[in-house]
Length: 58
Image 1 (tube, rainbow, N blue to C red):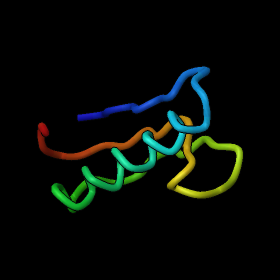
Image 2: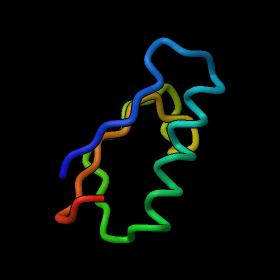
Image 3: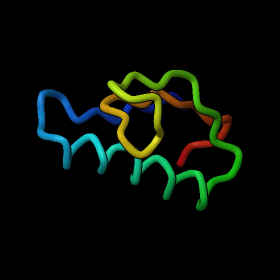
Image 4: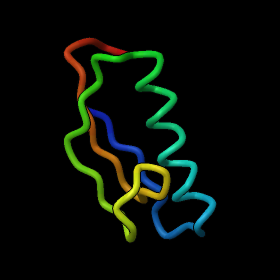
């Protein structure tokens, strides 16, 4: 399964939410692997696009 979370053109709060959603999913499903993180500041808390995958459907 491949999934992408994106804040689009949203404000900073949306970018923070993208990182928070990804971190929450990683806690629930530790097998999730980060494939791509696109952001202004290299920080999972402020990513505006996260692409990740899992061998399982989540």
